[in-house]
Image (cartoon, rainbow, N blue to C red; front, top):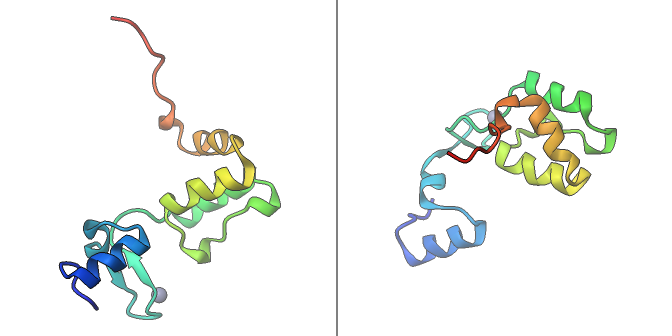
Length: 103
Ligand SMILES: [Zn+2]
């Protein structure tokens, strides 16, 4: 692996659109070699099933793709437009901010 603190490393990072923190928080899977994040960014199988229950077939997510939530959100917006927000809010109700109030 090319160190991230070299010019070449920096260029690779820029190409991947990743930050140093993101790269340091990744490790290849010991079984299949796929680079996975060490953070809690992968929805559980149960969460993916909940999403798929309300998604049209062509927009459904494959759990086996191990997409991060950062990949899923723009993917849903691309596939079903603004409806993605309703889908996400139905699964993560705390995303809805409390009503705005003037103090
Ligand atoms: Zn693996």
